[in-house]
Image (cartoon, rainbow, N blue to C red; front, top):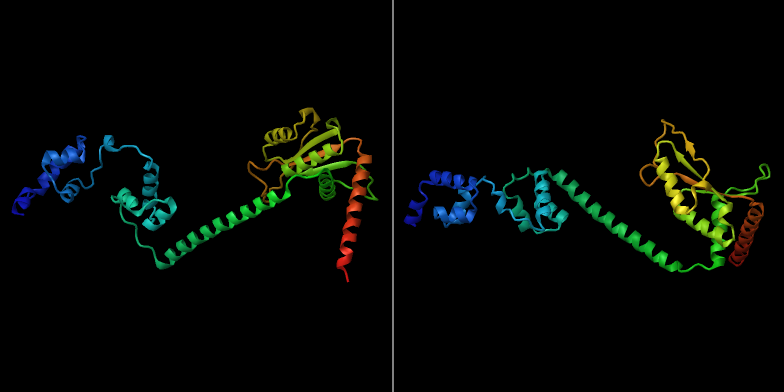
Length: 290
């Protein structure tokens, strides 16, 4: 023990040598062998605060995790939070951030808020998984639609979203407006089922002036597969600066209007079919009434 003590007695001089060697690009092993330091604790103290040379930093799959762990640690995150966030072990985190200052302990109330927030994030993830599972199961239940089922579905969609004839406003023509591209796809498939030729269709995009008008026009043209000559001039809606619009962003493409030319006879068929659905529904409900 006396020999070991004498060996490291002039610690500051030894540290100065170690730092000099480190800054010339030597690795820990090279410095250990050069100075004959066989005690890792002593070597750590000699090199404390001195970063390793770049050539010793071998790239590996965990580099991104290490960088993120250091970033979170500098933000004051605990090992537990970093572990949950990144999914890596505490031992790895400790190794990656051991040279960083320890974060200040938060007040119990703040820690409780953080814990509650983490639990809520987990709860939201569970709910979203259940939501997606329910939707997937409902999708699988539908299967293939028969022509009759598609016909009845289309009648209901049109009567909900299409223009209708009024005693005070005679307009027996088929015009359908919607912003949901899936709804538009179903409606076009329904028109095809009814034998409506593509050259009888005219389209019109309606969109707010602050949106990507050109992008929306191209989107609806691609979706319908129609030639741009089948599109009338786009209707631009003026923006009211006093209102806050929620339908913004890349997913906002306005509404698409689909008009069927020479469609008075088709409109009458749709209206008649709708009344037939209503009467059938009433009849099905009779046994349930007392």
